[in-house]
Image (tube, rainbow, N blue to C red):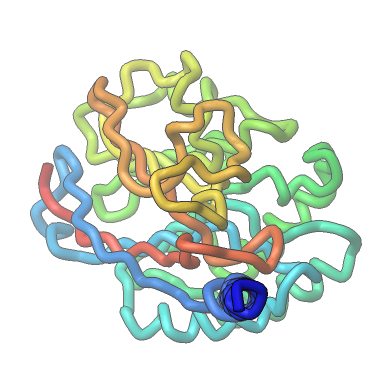
Length: 279
């Protein structure tokens, strides 16, 4: 009798494990969540208050999952008719030139803002070992052909909102001082930085305001109350969501739309829809 009870319990646990594995592999990686939040910005022009800004990050087009999911997600995102769209890096998981063809197909469905569309690069956009400048140049070319203005340690103002974009921290062109030396605190500023570890570097020149990042994917898998085991940052505080840096800066880390590997648990893929507010 005890042996029979044990075998029944084992069978149930095995079945539960199989269902959890199936969910983690085939369900949650494609269960997109649109996260809606307010984004208060100091000195925001009155005419921009109430407009929408959409953040899309880490689409990772390549051979590690069915990238048609990205196209389907873009189609859903376009229904929001955002006023601004920002892309915070990692457009491909580079292996060879096939990723350029795949990315070009995805970018035919690019979500664009009615007023502006801005992007920055991530480490994967620099190819193998984050060191192939020719790969980054091709990614930039495809993005700009699709209507995305790429900021590489540069800034641009649209309708009174100033976008500051850093190039990737791990790659070959991380030179934030090129743009931060021109930082003007009396403007409405919004900063884009792929890797949130940059928040701990001495590169900010007194910057106050929001930083939008990606890179972590929220860890992709997370047990309740525990730090995700796969978190590619030095500062393990930087997982996902809003973090008050307690010095006038606030960080928001997007959980990523794509995946490095097709597995997610309690970390659904995310597109963030911000409503602009006067801060």
